[in-house]
Length: 489
Length: 99
Image (cartoon, rainbow over the protein chains, first blue to last red):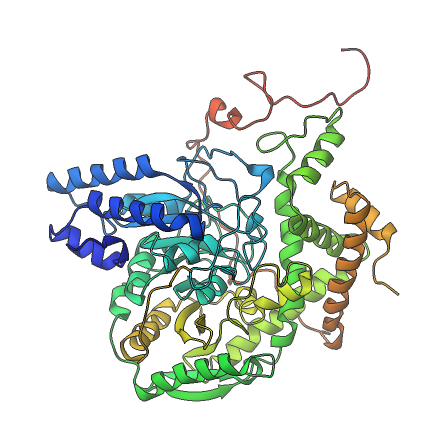
Protein backbone atom coordinates (compact mmCIF):
# COMPACT_ATOMS: atom_id res chain seq x y z
CA UNK A 1 0.00 0.00 0.00
CA UNK A 2 0.99 3.61 -0.46
CA UNK A 3 2.30 5.82 2.27
CA UNK A 4 -0.88 7.74 2.93
CA UNK A 5 -3.06 5.13 4.57
CA UNK A 6 -4.63 7.85 6.70
CA UNK A 7 -6.53 9.09 3.65
CA UNK A 8 -8.40 5.80 3.26
CA UNK A 9 -12.06 5.37 4.05
CA UNK A 10 -13.15 2.80 6.60
CA UNK A 11 -14.39 0.30 4.02
CA UNK A 12 -11.12 0.63 2.08
CA UNK A 13 -9.12 -0.02 5.25
CA UNK A 14 -11.28 -2.99 6.08
CA UNK A 15 -10.81 -4.44 2.57
CA UNK A 16 -7.06 -3.82 2.48
CA UNK A 17 -6.52 -5.44 5.87
CA UNK A 18 -8.65 -8.44 4.97
CA UNK A 19 -6.77 -8.91 1.71
CA UNK A 20 -3.48 -8.74 3.57
CA UNK A 21 -2.34 -5.61 1.72
CA UNK A 22 -1.80 -3.76 4.95
CA UNK A 23 -2.18 -4.30 8.68
CA UNK A 24 -4.09 -2.62 11.46
CA UNK A 25 -0.71 -1.56 12.87
CA UNK A 26 0.34 0.17 9.64
CA UNK A 27 -2.97 1.98 9.37
CA UNK A 28 -2.91 3.06 13.00
CA UNK A 29 0.67 4.31 12.72
CA UNK A 30 -0.20 6.24 9.59
CA UNK A 31 -3.17 7.95 11.24
CA UNK A 32 -1.19 8.69 14.41
CA UNK A 33 1.50 10.19 12.20
CA UNK A 34 -1.09 12.34 10.50
CA UNK A 35 -2.44 13.47 13.86
CA UNK A 36 1.08 14.40 14.87
CA UNK A 37 1.53 16.41 11.67
CA UNK A 38 -1.70 18.44 11.64
CA UNK A 39 -3.07 18.43 15.16
CA UNK A 40 -1.09 21.54 16.14
CA UNK A 41 -3.22 23.49 13.69
CA UNK A 42 -6.57 21.69 13.94
CA UNK A 43 -6.75 20.70 17.62
CA UNK A 44 -9.55 18.22 17.13
CA UNK A 45 -8.46 15.87 19.92
CA UNK A 46 -8.50 16.55 23.62
CA UNK A 47 -6.78 13.21 24.32
CA UNK A 48 -4.73 11.07 21.96
CA UNK A 49 -4.38 7.43 22.97
CA UNK A 50 -1.24 6.59 20.95
CA UNK A 51 0.05 3.64 22.96
CA UNK A 52 -3.38 2.20 23.55
CA UNK A 53 -4.22 2.41 19.83
CA UNK A 54 -1.00 0.69 18.79
CA UNK A 55 -1.50 -2.12 21.28
CA UNK A 56 -5.06 -2.56 20.15
CA UNK A 57 -3.99 -2.65 16.48
CA UNK A 58 -1.28 -5.21 17.27
CA UNK A 59 -3.85 -7.34 19.02
CA UNK A 60 -6.14 -7.21 16.00
CA UNK A 61 -3.28 -8.14 13.68
CA UNK A 62 -2.48 -11.07 15.93
CA UNK A 63 -6.05 -12.27 15.80
CA UNK A 64 -6.16 -11.98 12.02
CA UNK A 65 -2.93 -13.99 11.79
CA UNK A 66 -4.44 -16.63 14.03
CA UNK A 67 -7.31 -16.95 11.58
CA UNK A 68 -9.95 -15.41 13.81
CA UNK A 69 -12.73 -13.22 12.42
CA UNK A 70 -11.56 -9.75 13.48
CA UNK A 71 -14.98 -8.13 13.03
CA UNK A 72 -16.47 -5.82 10.40
CA UNK A 73 -14.42 -2.80 11.50
CA UNK A 74 -11.13 -4.58 12.17
CA UNK A 75 -8.35 -2.03 12.20
CA UNK A 76 -10.54 0.98 11.44
CA UNK A 77 -9.21 3.98 13.41
CA UNK A 78 -12.03 5.85 15.14
CA UNK A 79 -12.16 8.97 17.33
CA UNK A 80 -14.87 9.50 19.96
CA UNK A 81 -16.53 12.69 21.15
CA UNK A 82 -15.66 13.49 24.76
CA UNK A 83 -19.20 12.68 25.95
CA UNK A 84 -18.85 8.95 25.18
CA UNK A 85 -18.18 7.01 28.37
CA UNK A 86 -14.97 5.00 27.94
CA UNK A 87 -12.93 3.06 30.46
CA UNK A 88 -9.86 4.13 28.52
CA UNK A 89 -8.79 7.74 29.11
CA UNK A 90 -11.13 10.33 30.55
CA UNK A 91 -14.69 11.41 29.76
CA UNK A 92 -14.89 15.11 30.55
CA UNK A 93 -17.55 16.51 28.16
CA UNK A 94 -15.00 19.31 27.76
CA UNK A 95 -16.30 20.75 31.03
CA UNK A 96 -14.31 21.80 34.06
CA UNK A 97 -16.90 20.14 36.25
CA UNK A 98 -16.17 16.69 34.80
CA UNK A 99 -12.48 17.13 34.03
CA UNK A 100 -10.51 13.95 34.65
CA UNK A 101 -13.59 11.74 35.08
CA UNK A 102 -12.72 8.11 34.40
CA UNK A 103 -15.81 6.17 33.45
CA UNK A 104 -16.12 2.80 35.20
CA UNK A 105 -17.86 1.39 32.12
CA UNK A 106 -18.02 1.67 28.35
CA UNK A 107 -21.20 2.88 26.66
CA UNK A 108 -23.06 0.39 24.47
CA UNK A 109 -21.92 1.95 21.19
CA UNK A 110 -18.33 1.97 22.44
CA UNK A 111 -18.64 -1.74 23.25
CA UNK A 112 -20.20 -2.49 19.88
CA UNK A 113 -17.42 -0.69 18.03
CA UNK A 114 -14.78 -2.52 20.08
CA UNK A 115 -16.43 -5.87 19.38
CA UNK A 116 -16.37 -4.98 15.69
CA UNK A 117 -12.58 -4.48 15.83
CA UNK A 118 -12.35 -0.69 15.84
CA UNK A 119 -9.15 0.99 17.01
CA UNK A 120 -9.92 4.02 19.18
CA UNK A 121 -7.57 6.95 18.79
CA UNK A 122 -8.75 9.22 21.57
CA UNK A 123 -11.32 11.80 22.58
CA UNK A 124 -12.56 14.67 20.45
CA UNK A 125 -13.26 18.27 21.37
CA UNK A 126 -16.81 19.53 21.81
CA UNK A 127 -18.82 22.39 23.20
CA UNK A 128 -19.16 21.88 26.95
CA UNK A 129 -21.87 19.24 27.51
CA UNK A 130 -22.66 19.48 23.78
CA UNK A 131 -24.15 22.96 24.19
CA UNK A 132 -23.10 25.12 21.29
CA UNK A 133 -22.77 25.44 17.55
CA UNK A 134 -19.10 26.32 17.16
CA UNK A 135 -17.12 24.28 19.74
CA UNK A 136 -16.03 27.63 21.21
CA UNK A 137 -17.74 26.61 24.46
CA UNK A 138 -15.17 23.87 25.12
CA UNK A 139 -13.29 24.46 28.35
CA UNK A 140 -10.27 22.67 26.86
CA UNK A 141 -9.32 24.27 23.53
CA UNK A 142 -10.54 25.75 20.28
CA UNK A 143 -10.83 23.42 17.31
CA UNK A 144 -10.17 25.04 13.94
CA UNK A 145 -11.90 24.31 10.68
CA UNK A 146 -9.47 22.47 8.37
CA UNK A 147 -10.91 24.36 5.38
CA UNK A 148 -10.01 27.70 6.89
CA UNK A 149 -8.23 27.86 10.22
CA UNK A 150 -9.77 31.25 11.03
CA UNK A 151 -13.21 29.63 11.03
CA UNK A 152 -15.03 27.48 13.55
CA UNK A 153 -15.66 23.80 12.76
CA UNK A 154 -19.28 24.08 13.91
CA UNK A 155 -20.55 22.31 16.95
CA UNK A 156 -21.12 20.81 19.24
CA UNK A 157 -19.24 17.84 17.70
CA UNK A 158 -16.63 20.18 16.22
CA UNK A 159 -13.66 17.96 17.02
CA UNK A 160 -15.34 14.98 15.37
CA UNK A 161 -16.06 16.90 12.17
CA UNK A 162 -12.67 18.61 11.94
CA UNK A 163 -10.91 15.33 12.71
CA UNK A 164 -12.50 13.64 9.71
CA UNK A 165 -11.93 16.59 7.42
CA UNK A 166 -8.23 16.59 8.35
CA UNK A 167 -7.91 12.78 7.95
CA UNK A 168 -7.12 12.36 11.66
CA UNK A 169 -9.41 9.31 11.79
CA UNK A 170 -11.30 7.17 9.29
CA UNK A 171 -14.53 7.61 11.23
CA UNK A 172 -15.49 9.74 14.21
CA UNK A 173 -18.45 9.43 16.51
CA UNK A 174 -20.56 12.34 17.74
CA UNK A 175 -23.92 13.17 19.25
CA UNK A 176 -26.74 15.34 17.94
CA UNK A 177 -29.36 17.08 20.07
CA UNK A 178 -30.32 19.95 17.75
CA UNK A 179 -27.83 19.64 14.90
CA UNK A 180 -24.57 18.85 16.67
CA UNK A 181 -23.60 16.20 14.11
CA UNK A 182 -25.12 17.61 10.93
CA UNK A 183 -24.10 21.25 11.34
CA UNK A 184 -20.36 20.61 11.93
CA UNK A 185 -20.40 17.93 9.20
CA UNK A 186 -21.72 20.59 6.80
CA UNK A 187 -19.18 23.19 7.94
CA UNK A 188 -16.26 20.75 7.63
CA UNK A 189 -17.35 19.03 4.40
CA UNK A 190 -17.93 15.49 5.64
CA UNK A 191 -20.96 13.25 6.08
CA UNK A 192 -22.79 13.27 9.39
CA UNK A 193 -25.85 11.26 10.34
CA UNK A 194 -28.30 11.74 13.17
CA UNK A 195 -30.24 8.48 13.21
CA UNK A 196 -33.90 8.21 14.20
CA UNK A 197 -34.45 8.69 17.93
CA UNK A 198 -34.26 5.19 19.38
CA UNK A 199 -32.29 3.66 16.49
CA UNK A 200 -29.00 3.71 18.41
CA UNK A 201 -28.55 3.13 22.13
CA UNK A 202 -27.69 6.18 24.22
CA UNK A 203 -26.40 4.11 27.13
CA UNK A 204 -23.08 5.60 28.13
CA UNK A 205 -23.61 8.90 26.33
CA UNK A 206 -23.53 11.70 28.90
CA UNK A 207 -27.07 13.10 28.73
CA UNK A 208 -27.81 16.65 27.60
CA UNK A 209 -31.50 16.55 26.56
CA UNK A 210 -32.76 13.01 26.79
CA UNK A 211 -35.74 13.27 24.45
CA UNK A 212 -33.57 14.77 21.70
CA UNK A 213 -30.05 13.27 22.04
CA UNK A 214 -28.91 10.69 19.54
CA UNK A 215 -25.54 9.13 18.73
CA UNK A 216 -24.26 9.11 15.17
CA UNK A 217 -21.21 8.82 12.92
CA UNK A 218 -19.12 11.20 10.82
CA UNK A 219 -17.70 9.52 7.73
CA UNK A 220 -15.91 10.27 4.48
CA UNK A 221 -18.54 8.58 2.28
CA UNK A 222 -21.94 6.87 2.17
CA UNK A 223 -20.51 3.37 2.17
CA UNK A 224 -18.82 4.01 5.52
CA UNK A 225 -22.12 5.32 6.85
CA UNK A 226 -23.75 1.99 5.98
CA UNK A 227 -20.86 0.10 7.55
CA UNK A 228 -21.00 1.96 10.86
CA UNK A 229 -24.79 1.96 11.13
CA UNK A 230 -24.77 -1.81 10.68
CA UNK A 231 -22.54 -2.04 13.75
CA UNK A 232 -24.15 0.51 16.10
CA UNK A 233 -27.91 0.31 15.40
CA UNK A 234 -30.35 -1.77 17.38
CA UNK A 235 -32.21 -2.32 20.60
CA UNK A 236 -30.28 -2.22 23.86
CA UNK A 237 -31.83 -3.46 27.10
CA UNK A 238 -29.78 -0.79 28.89
CA UNK A 239 -31.55 2.04 27.06
CA UNK A 240 -35.30 1.71 27.44
CA UNK A 241 -35.82 4.36 24.74
CA UNK A 242 -33.97 2.29 22.14
CA UNK A 243 -36.46 0.83 19.68
CA UNK A 244 -37.16 -2.84 19.23
CA UNK A 245 -37.22 -2.62 15.46
CA UNK A 246 -35.15 -4.95 13.26
CA UNK A 247 -31.89 -3.49 11.89
CA UNK A 248 -31.74 -3.73 8.11
CA UNK A 249 -28.68 -4.65 6.08
CA UNK A 250 -27.58 -1.11 5.30
CA UNK A 251 -25.13 -2.26 2.62
CA UNK A 252 -28.18 -3.05 0.46
CA UNK A 253 -28.81 0.70 0.33
CA UNK A 254 -25.54 1.12 -1.58
CA UNK A 255 -27.07 0.87 -5.02
CA UNK A 256 -26.94 3.55 -7.61
CA UNK A 257 -30.66 3.75 -8.18
CA UNK A 258 -32.94 6.59 -7.15
CA UNK A 259 -35.24 6.46 -10.14
CA UNK A 260 -38.74 7.53 -9.17
CA UNK A 261 -37.68 8.62 -5.68
CA UNK A 262 -39.71 11.62 -4.57
CA UNK A 263 -37.70 14.44 -2.99
CA UNK A 264 -39.67 17.02 -1.05
CA UNK A 265 -38.38 20.61 -0.95
CA UNK A 266 -39.99 22.52 1.93
CA UNK A 267 -40.70 26.06 0.80
CA UNK A 268 -40.08 27.31 4.36
CA UNK A 269 -36.40 26.34 4.09
CA UNK A 270 -35.75 28.41 1.00
CA UNK A 271 -36.67 31.87 2.24
CA UNK A 272 -34.43 34.95 2.37
CA UNK A 273 -32.77 33.61 5.53
CA UNK A 274 -30.82 31.34 3.19
CA UNK A 275 -27.89 33.02 1.48
CA UNK A 276 -27.98 33.13 -2.31
CA UNK A 277 -24.84 31.09 -2.71
CA UNK A 278 -26.03 28.36 -0.35
CA UNK A 279 -29.36 28.22 -2.12
CA UNK A 280 -27.58 27.76 -5.44
CA UNK A 281 -25.48 24.88 -4.03
CA UNK A 282 -28.49 23.10 -2.56
CA UNK A 283 -30.57 23.43 -5.70
CA UNK A 284 -27.64 22.27 -7.84
CA UNK A 285 -27.35 19.15 -5.68
CA UNK A 286 -31.07 18.52 -6.07
CA UNK A 287 -30.62 18.86 -9.85
CA UNK A 288 -27.99 16.10 -9.73
CA UNK A 289 -30.50 13.81 -8.05
CA UNK A 290 -33.17 14.80 -10.56
CA UNK A 291 -30.87 13.87 -13.41
CA UNK A 292 -30.73 10.38 -11.90
CA UNK A 293 -34.48 10.02 -12.13
CA UNK A 294 -35.65 11.46 -8.83
CA UNK A 295 -38.76 13.60 -8.82
CA UNK A 296 -38.95 16.89 -6.98
CA UNK A 297 -42.11 17.96 -5.21
CA UNK A 298 -42.76 21.07 -3.15
CA UNK A 299 -43.82 20.33 0.41
CA UNK A 300 -44.69 22.54 3.36
CA UNK A 301 -43.51 22.43 6.96
CA UNK A 302 -45.64 25.30 8.24
CA UNK A 303 -44.27 25.34 11.79
CA UNK A 304 -40.60 25.56 10.80
CA UNK A 305 -40.25 29.11 12.11
CA UNK A 306 -41.22 27.98 15.63
CA UNK A 307 -38.70 25.15 15.88
CA UNK A 308 -35.86 27.10 17.49
CA UNK A 309 -38.16 28.54 20.16
CA UNK A 310 -39.56 25.09 20.98
CA UNK A 311 -36.12 23.56 20.88
CA UNK A 312 -34.59 26.03 23.36
CA UNK A 313 -37.43 25.46 25.82
CA UNK A 314 -37.28 21.67 25.69
CA UNK A 315 -33.54 21.20 25.51
CA UNK A 316 -32.82 23.63 28.33
CA UNK A 317 -35.58 22.17 30.52
CA UNK A 318 -34.19 18.67 30.06
CA UNK A 319 -30.62 19.89 30.49
CA UNK A 320 -31.42 21.62 33.77
CA UNK A 321 -32.69 18.29 35.10
CA UNK A 322 -29.87 16.18 33.64
CA UNK A 323 -27.11 18.47 34.87
CA UNK A 324 -28.43 18.55 38.42
CA UNK A 325 -26.45 15.35 39.02
CA UNK A 326 -23.15 17.22 38.95
CA UNK A 327 -23.19 18.17 42.59
CA UNK A 328 -19.62 17.56 43.70
CA UNK A 329 -20.44 14.40 45.64
CA UNK A 330 -19.98 11.27 43.54
CA UNK A 331 -17.78 12.56 40.73
CA UNK A 332 -16.59 15.74 39.17
CA UNK A 333 -15.33 18.97 40.58
CA UNK A 334 -15.86 20.03 44.19
CA UNK A 335 -15.00 23.57 45.19
CA UNK A 336 -12.37 23.49 47.95
CA UNK A 337 -13.92 26.32 50.00
CA UNK A 338 -17.30 24.71 50.57
CA UNK A 339 -18.13 24.66 54.29
CA UNK A 340 -21.69 23.36 54.00
CA UNK A 341 -23.49 21.01 51.64
CA UNK A 342 -25.45 23.89 50.11
CA UNK A 343 -22.22 25.78 49.51
CA UNK A 344 -20.66 22.69 47.99
CA UNK A 345 -23.45 22.46 45.39
CA UNK A 346 -23.47 26.16 44.63
CA UNK A 347 -19.75 26.81 44.51
CA UNK A 348 -18.98 23.61 42.59
CA UNK A 349 -21.61 24.31 39.92
CA UNK A 350 -20.82 28.01 39.61
CA UNK A 351 -17.10 27.41 39.17
CA UNK A 352 -17.45 24.14 37.26
CA UNK A 353 -19.84 25.17 34.48
CA UNK A 354 -18.98 27.63 31.72
CA UNK A 355 -21.22 30.58 30.75
CA UNK A 356 -23.31 28.85 28.08
CA UNK A 357 -24.09 25.86 30.31
CA UNK A 358 -25.09 28.20 33.13
CA UNK A 359 -27.27 30.19 30.74
CA UNK A 360 -29.08 27.04 29.62
CA UNK A 361 -29.51 25.74 33.16
CA UNK A 362 -31.01 29.11 34.09
CA UNK A 363 -33.35 29.16 31.10
CA UNK A 364 -34.39 25.55 31.67
CA UNK A 365 -35.00 26.15 35.36
CA UNK A 366 -37.03 29.26 34.54
CA UNK A 367 -39.33 27.56 32.00
CA UNK A 368 -39.99 24.72 34.41
CA UNK A 369 -40.50 26.94 37.45
CA UNK A 370 -43.81 27.34 39.21
CA UNK A 371 -46.17 29.63 37.32
CA UNK A 372 -44.28 29.39 34.02
CA UNK A 373 -44.50 25.66 33.27
CA UNK A 374 -47.74 25.90 31.27
CA UNK A 375 -46.76 29.03 29.41
CA UNK A 376 -43.43 27.67 28.24
CA UNK A 377 -42.83 23.95 28.66
CA UNK A 378 -46.36 22.73 28.02
CA UNK A 379 -46.77 25.16 25.14
CA UNK A 380 -43.51 23.89 23.65
CA UNK A 381 -44.64 20.26 23.94
CA UNK A 382 -47.80 21.18 22.04
CA UNK A 383 -45.96 22.96 19.26
CA UNK A 384 -43.55 20.04 19.17
CA UNK A 385 -46.53 17.83 18.32
CA UNK A 386 -47.43 20.21 15.49
CA UNK A 387 -43.87 20.12 14.15
CA UNK A 388 -43.88 16.33 14.17
CA UNK A 389 -47.20 16.34 12.35
CA UNK A 390 -45.78 18.69 9.70
CA UNK A 391 -43.24 16.02 8.81
CA UNK A 392 -45.83 13.23 8.81
CA UNK A 393 -47.96 15.28 6.42
CA UNK A 394 -45.01 16.15 4.19
CA UNK A 395 -43.94 12.51 3.95
CA UNK A 396 -47.35 11.68 2.50
CA UNK A 397 -46.15 13.10 -0.79
CA UNK A 398 -42.40 12.39 -0.75
CA UNK A 399 -39.82 9.77 0.27
CA UNK A 400 -37.16 12.12 1.55
CA UNK A 401 -36.93 15.83 2.24
CA UNK A 402 -33.95 17.93 1.15
CA UNK A 403 -32.96 21.20 2.82
CA UNK A 404 -29.79 23.17 3.45
CA UNK A 405 -28.02 21.96 6.59
CA UNK A 406 -27.03 25.50 7.57
CA UNK A 407 -27.96 28.98 6.33
CA UNK A 408 -24.31 29.97 5.85
CA UNK A 409 -20.92 28.24 5.58
CA UNK A 410 -18.44 28.24 8.48
CA UNK A 411 -18.10 31.56 10.32
CA UNK A 412 -15.07 33.10 12.00
CA UNK A 413 -14.14 32.68 15.65
CA UNK A 414 -15.92 35.14 17.90
CA UNK A 415 -18.51 36.07 15.26
CA UNK A 416 -21.45 34.89 17.35
CA UNK A 417 -20.09 34.41 20.85
CA UNK A 418 -21.51 37.64 22.28
CA UNK A 419 -25.03 37.00 21.08
CA UNK A 420 -26.40 33.64 22.22
CA UNK A 421 -29.62 34.06 20.26
CA UNK A 422 -27.74 34.52 17.00
CA UNK A 423 -25.70 31.40 17.74
CA UNK A 424 -28.93 29.48 18.41
CA UNK A 425 -30.26 30.51 15.00
CA UNK A 426 -27.40 28.53 13.37
CA UNK A 427 -29.58 25.49 14.13
CA UNK A 428 -32.52 26.79 12.11
CA UNK A 429 -32.64 23.85 9.68
CA UNK A 430 -31.52 21.12 12.05
CA UNK A 431 -33.30 21.40 15.40
CA UNK A 432 -36.81 20.56 14.17
CA UNK A 433 -35.52 17.14 13.09
CA UNK A 434 -34.65 16.23 16.69
CA UNK A 435 -38.03 17.54 17.84
CA UNK A 436 -39.73 15.21 15.33
CA UNK A 437 -37.32 12.35 16.07
CA UNK A 438 -36.70 11.57 12.39
CA UNK A 439 -33.30 10.75 10.83
CA UNK A 440 -31.23 13.44 9.14
CA UNK A 441 -27.94 13.36 7.28
CA UNK A 442 -25.71 16.14 6.05
CA UNK A 443 -23.68 15.43 2.94
CA UNK A 444 -21.12 17.72 1.34
CA UNK A 445 -22.44 19.42 -1.80
CA UNK A 446 -19.49 21.49 -2.98
CA UNK A 447 -17.51 24.54 -1.96
CA UNK A 448 -18.52 28.18 -1.90
CA UNK A 449 -16.50 30.86 -3.70
CA UNK A 450 -14.56 31.38 -0.46
CA UNK A 451 -13.64 27.66 -0.52
CA UNK A 452 -15.80 26.65 2.41
CA UNK A 453 -17.97 23.50 2.33
CA UNK A 454 -21.74 23.59 1.91
CA UNK A 455 -23.98 20.83 3.26
CA UNK A 456 -27.17 19.30 1.89
CA UNK A 457 -29.45 17.93 4.58
CA UNK A 458 -31.49 14.82 3.74
CA UNK A 459 -34.37 13.91 6.03
CA UNK A 460 -36.09 10.55 6.13
CA UNK A 461 -39.13 8.84 7.55
CA UNK A 462 -38.66 7.31 11.00
CA UNK A 463 -36.20 4.38 10.88
CA UNK A 464 -35.55 4.88 7.18
CA UNK A 465 -31.83 5.63 7.36
CA UNK A 466 -31.47 3.31 4.35
CA UNK A 467 -33.02 5.78 1.93
CA UNK A 468 -30.75 8.56 3.21
CA UNK A 469 -27.73 6.36 2.60
CA UNK A 470 -29.02 5.38 -0.85
CA UNK A 471 -29.48 9.01 -1.88
CA UNK A 472 -26.09 10.01 -0.45
CA UNK A 473 -24.50 7.16 -2.39
CA UNK A 474 -26.18 8.14 -5.66
CA UNK A 475 -25.20 11.77 -5.15
CA UNK A 476 -21.56 10.82 -4.55
CA UNK A 477 -21.47 8.87 -7.81
CA UNK A 478 -22.88 11.71 -9.90
CA UNK A 479 -22.16 14.94 -8.05
CA UNK A 480 -19.89 16.19 -10.81
CA UNK A 481 -17.70 18.43 -8.64
CA UNK A 482 -14.18 17.53 -7.73
CA UNK A 483 -13.60 16.43 -4.17
CA UNK A 484 -10.45 17.85 -2.69
CA UNK A 485 -8.83 17.59 0.71
CA UNK A 486 -9.13 20.41 3.19
CA UNK A 487 -6.01 22.60 2.88
CA UNK A 488 -5.49 23.04 6.65
CA UNK A 489 -4.38 26.63 6.27
CA UNK B 1 -39.79 46.54 29.82
CA UNK B 2 -37.40 43.70 30.04
CA UNK B 3 -38.98 40.28 30.33
CA UNK B 4 -36.65 39.39 33.15
CA UNK B 5 -35.57 41.42 36.15
CA UNK B 6 -32.56 41.01 38.37
CA UNK B 7 -34.92 39.69 41.02
CA UNK B 8 -36.12 36.95 38.66
CA UNK B 9 -32.54 35.98 37.92
CA UNK B 10 -31.74 35.81 41.64
CA UNK B 11 -34.75 33.60 42.25
CA UNK B 12 -33.97 31.19 39.39
CA UNK B 13 -30.27 31.09 40.28
CA UNK B 14 -31.34 30.01 43.76
CA UNK B 15 -33.43 27.19 42.33
CA UNK B 16 -30.59 26.13 40.04
CA UNK B 17 -28.02 26.38 42.85
CA UNK B 18 -25.87 28.85 40.96
CA UNK B 19 -24.08 31.88 42.39
CA UNK B 20 -23.78 34.69 39.83
CA UNK B 21 -21.42 37.61 40.32
CA UNK B 22 -22.44 41.15 39.32
CA UNK B 23 -21.39 41.27 35.65
CA UNK B 24 -22.59 37.68 35.08
CA UNK B 25 -25.95 38.55 36.55
CA UNK B 26 -26.31 41.63 34.36
CA UNK B 27 -25.47 39.61 31.25
CA UNK B 28 -27.92 36.91 32.34
CA UNK B 29 -30.73 39.48 32.69
CA UNK B 30 -30.03 40.70 29.15
CA UNK B 31 -29.56 37.28 27.53
CA UNK B 32 -32.54 35.58 29.14
CA UNK B 33 -34.71 38.59 28.35
CA UNK B 34 -33.75 38.42 24.67
CA UNK B 35 -34.16 34.66 24.41
CA UNK B 36 -37.54 34.70 26.16
CA UNK B 37 -38.57 37.59 23.94
CA UNK B 38 -37.80 35.42 20.93
CA UNK B 39 -39.62 32.46 22.46
CA UNK B 40 -42.75 34.63 22.76
CA UNK B 41 -43.19 33.89 19.08
CA UNK B 42 -44.96 30.72 20.18
CA UNK B 43 -47.88 32.79 21.45
CA UNK B 44 -48.79 33.54 17.82
CA UNK B 45 -49.96 29.95 17.59
CA UNK B 46 -53.31 28.78 18.82
CA UNK B 47 -52.67 25.37 20.36
CA UNK B 48 -56.11 24.83 21.84
CA UNK B 49 -56.92 21.14 21.71
CA UNK B 50 -53.40 20.06 20.72
CA UNK B 51 -52.14 17.13 22.78
CA UNK B 52 -48.68 17.90 24.17
CA UNK B 53 -46.08 15.49 22.84
CA UNK B 54 -44.44 13.53 25.62
CA UNK B 55 -42.61 10.89 23.59
CA UNK B 56 -41.28 11.00 20.10
CA UNK B 57 -41.74 7.27 19.61
CA UNK B 58 -45.01 5.48 20.06
CA UNK B 59 -43.82 3.69 23.17
CA UNK B 60 -45.34 2.11 26.20
CA UNK B 61 -43.64 1.18 29.45
CA UNK B 62 -40.60 -1.01 29.09
CA UNK B 63 -40.24 -3.73 31.67
CA UNK B 64 -37.50 -6.19 32.47
CA UNK B 65 -37.29 -9.23 34.68
CA UNK B 66 -36.56 -8.33 38.29
CA UNK B 67 -33.34 -10.25 38.52
CA UNK B 68 -30.02 -9.29 40.04
CA UNK B 69 -27.50 -8.33 37.38
CA UNK B 70 -23.98 -7.01 37.31
CA UNK B 71 -23.42 -3.60 38.84
CA UNK B 72 -20.47 -1.43 39.74
CA UNK B 73 -18.29 -2.52 42.64
CA UNK B 74 -17.91 -0.22 45.61
CA UNK B 75 -14.39 0.67 44.48
CA UNK B 76 -15.57 1.54 40.98
CA UNK B 77 -18.43 3.63 42.33
CA UNK B 78 -16.14 5.56 44.65
CA UNK B 79 -13.12 6.02 42.43
CA UNK B 80 -14.22 9.36 40.90
CA UNK B 81 -15.49 10.92 44.09
CA UNK B 82 -13.79 14.11 45.28
CA UNK B 83 -13.79 12.83 48.87
CA UNK B 84 -14.41 9.41 50.44
CA UNK B 85 -13.38 7.49 53.51
CA UNK B 86 -12.89 4.38 51.40
CA UNK B 87 -16.39 3.10 51.99
CA UNK B 88 -18.64 6.17 51.73
CA UNK B 89 -18.84 9.49 49.91
CA UNK B 90 -17.91 12.29 52.27
CA UNK B 91 -19.62 15.70 52.22
CA UNK B 92 -19.36 18.74 54.48
CA UNK B 93 -21.41 18.63 57.69
CA UNK B 94 -25.14 18.92 57.16
CA UNK B 95 -26.36 19.44 60.74
CA UNK B 96 -24.94 21.93 63.20
CA UNK B 97 -23.84 20.72 66.60
CA UNK B 98 -21.21 18.63 68.16
CA UNK B 99 -19.25 16.17 66.13
